[in-house]
Image (cartoon, rainbow, N blue to C red):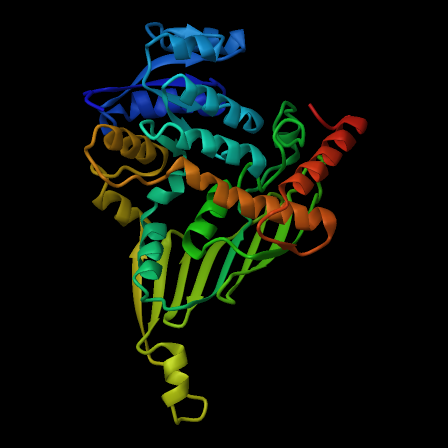
Length: 388
């Protein structure tokens, strides 16, 4: 794309949309000099009035299709409730526009698969997802260690991510959040898409999932407590535990392989590397209760961010910077391809389905069964007056 500036249009000016307008295109615009806010769309007149007050020179729309036709934008940023992400993305592609969609890609894999199929029909357009955790230098380093085979064959991945604490006041706000009808789930679909993406980005997609998902201590229909055990094609196992009611919570990722162990916690990566692969050591060792010798490498996430601040800013700012640079051909590395959003969502859907049916779910996922079970919960929510 031979342009010096990439013009972005926001669909949705709620908490996230206004965040992108205020932070990415205003306060931190020096980190994204080639990204410009060009249009804002929302169906809520009050939100649009706020947008006009804050950005009086930016055109506003109540119909996103009109914004798409305006010729004012190059990229659509989708910041709406999850169910309609795929619909808006598909309409954007059909309007000849690039797309940067917020997480999750959608609520269920069937609609996201259709979105990906549409994206494939438009190879000239760039499709990205706001997986901002892929800019974290600690996860990038973990990925490098795995891909370089320094960790060897993976044997286990465990993520305890329970520091999403949400009190009653959070859910008492009402609206579409925290409901089956409005949001499509609880902690899995709202708070954890980033971790589900990273879990599968680092270890791959499991072949089977056994899980529990329940509601603890809150008057909501969706899950806020999840424990999942999974198995990968190579025989490795995984555990994913998350909640929004634990206080204090934990955020600890541990990845074990024949070459050692990676632990990411408290903004630090610790790599304990075996001097010899475990399987080789076990075959050649003659010492009773012997263990492989190890060496330890540490990395601080904050320092990692500072080293690459100008070239690769952190988090959401970094995704927009990378997306913009890729469009302008200033980089050949694209961090968060939109088509990969279905991978973490598949894991999420499998966890839900296993918890709902009390059975182990094998992949490929039965997409129709998932939709059927989801509809049951939406109907029950309406019956109990817990939905939107």
